[in-house]
Length: 509
Image (cartoon, rainbow, N blue to C red):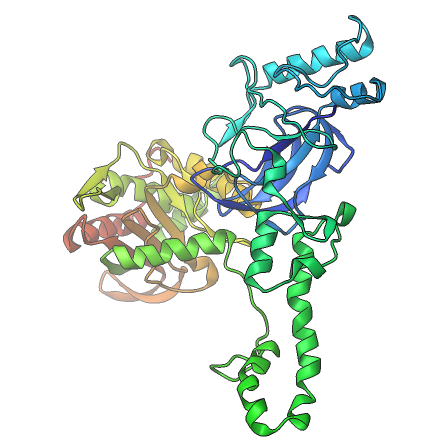
């Protein structure tokens, strides 16, 4: 009997509860190996490839590109390759006994040394060994002994289907989604429609929108009701109601038509408050959802204050031109400023901290032995902040290389959760957008953020005489709980002085 193994979407890091399915790398019927990438998913942090911890033939893909999947729900069903072979070779009659935990579904009378037996043994060894590759919340065994197995459960007629346990560290899906649950418990047959099998997510969606599943045709295999079927049913009544509502005012008296008017307006996509037509509804998810949550939390929890100063950056611009003329590879301006920032944080470590609140409400300031410098980067997915780890140990050239690498992987959506969530201080170059200043919001749970405006020609007094200089504005927003204005101003002035007189500080470049 063939035993289909269901791999549940694992915790992809930092307690993320959902991921959007970007694309499948495999199709039903494909043969896959252990650790082979099967799908690309986008979380609130980054885009990652999910490898399969099991080998075999793809039996079912649980989701469509663009669909949001919950952690702990089925991602892919895989039939062990040797189980499929054994089924073809086995006798028509199936034994009614439960297979042993170590069985793979092969015929018990298969003589040793046959190709099927050899393939079964190879499969066992592959699962035992794995590769050790880990995707944040789960991984293949990789030298930690025999892979955990779940005893197959009996079913009435179709093949036995079991849900595989998540490895240690993965999200706990609860009793209905846990390690030892028959997949049949995760679905329900609709009365009167034997072929219509739906998931709890689809049932909930139908219930919330008043969709009658008993009358809904399924577009999946065997009449399976999919999420897209419910979504189509949700949108279809809107069209029908509009068609019926149009002639209704003519046929019905005014007192009857009046109460239905607000509902008709909503169906037609008219905003009840403004009276304007609704052009689109965009779900807040992914990076935008995380940014919104963090910014709201920052504003509600942090008593912030802002200081700023105009800086004559002519000296720094001239230094770069001199280096260029010498044929050397010259770091970008942001790398130089990053070097000044790390030096300033050594002198003013209060701005390189974090506040932690205990359950009893008491708070403490956590200081760090090092600087993970976050670099705000605008991407197609939204604003993300990858961080240069141990930035205080890097020269300007090394900072430049790492900043370029991080911004590149962030814009590709390939930055890891560690790269995106480990900063201790953020540097934001909003000057690239052509603006002079901004009262930035602190990147929670950090306590400060430094913004750099555009560098432009401005009149400036030099040695008592008016001159045209390259001027930029620095803006520091800080958490007033960790320091007072004197500390913030001291740090800001330190960075400004370094920009105006960069040679001494950049001896190591």
